[in-house]
Image (cartoon, rainbow, N blue to C red; front, side, top):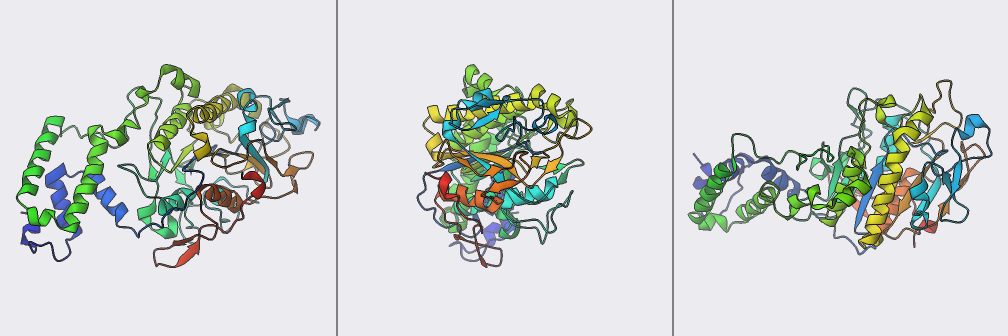
Amino acid sequence: MLRILERDAMGRGPLTRREWLRVGGVGLGGLSLAEFFRARAAAAESPAAPTGRAKAVIVLWFSGGVPQHETWDPKPEAPAEIRGEFGAIASRTPGLCVGELMPQTAQLTDKIAVVRTLATGDNAHSSSGYQMLTGVPHIPLSRENALPGKPNDSPSINALVRTLRTSRDALPAAITLPRRLANVGEKVWPGQDAGFLGQSYNPWLLTCDPSSENFDVPGCALPDEIPPLRLDRRLALREQFNRHLDLLARSEPAQRFDSYAGQALELLSGGQARNAFDLHQETEATRERYGRNPFGQSVLLARRLVEAGVSLVQVNWPRLDGKENGGGWDTHEVHSKCLKGWLMPMMDQTYSALIEDLAVRGLLEETVVCWVGEFGHTPKINAKAGRDHWGRVFSIALAGGGIRGGAIYGATDRHAGEARTDVVRPCDYLATVFHCLGYSPDTAVHDVTGRPLPLTRGQVIEPLVA
């Protein structure tokens, strides 16, 4: 029995969560997405976004850490145990050489700014990753297998964007895919959620493989016991129910419910939001250009989601079964084999495809592309032909959305092991991204108690912004 009928006909008095869930059960077969959208909107109103050159951000996260020596900061004159097996090649930017395994990216550096002196001072995946995700050092530093929770509950860049930007249609403002960042044993890193902002600002995590032939919106398929015909009947019942409760339907809670239910149905029934996930709408040539693998297709999906209005999409490097070191960038062993065999070719192909595709579509000027990881790798190759963790200095790259292409910031010593000039902190990198979106570092966000806090305590890297 619906207790909703016992309420005042004018809609006065609060409707409990349980009662609205009952309405959702009648209208949508207990559709959980409707509750998701309602909970999201129940959060405090986000501040209006100022006008910024960038409208969106795509974060490419190379979990395991990318070696600076074989990418943006090669040292061809260093001893063999430092420089590694691969040489350096000239790029389109005068004075910038990159690793020889980046031939496609080398032709696009006029659109890319390179930072060679990022430092976390942390050599653990989870705690250094926390700092890169939030801009706040983990307490303590170099704590491996660190888990979410106080005092390390600062919000991720994804969650901060969600507080600043409103959602569009049925899509949230921030999405992470195709997996969350975690150490072996699924020990989830801190710094991937909204932390002290509250759960309603958590980014939407999609665990998926967009390269699979039957890829669909994760978690949005109808249950087997609810075929399309049955859903149609339930929707018809809902319409009849609403027509007989006109007074209630005009109440503010009911109107909000209709909005959330509509958003959920948008994903279920194949509307514009769901179309963003349909990679089959892309040409075969485009899909091949990005790479027919989980990373390539995830990045292609990120471009489609940005086109559909998502403000930030983070693509985490996927696990590759059957490969050494789990197929990731944590190359403690057979470093060169992994780089040449799959890591660098996949990265170079997909990253260059994204930059080119955004430029051709006229989207690069309004989309910041971040090429980052949790740290770099040791200058010296170890006894197992690998490189180990190194947070003292490493490289990242930024492009688009107001970033000055062809810029090179900071310089390292002859072994790429220490910064010689212009040390950059993770909070400075984040401040620069937010600047491109139109927000100053001192923009206030509020924790769950209403306490105002600055967006970031970093400084904008002025030479990188146009």
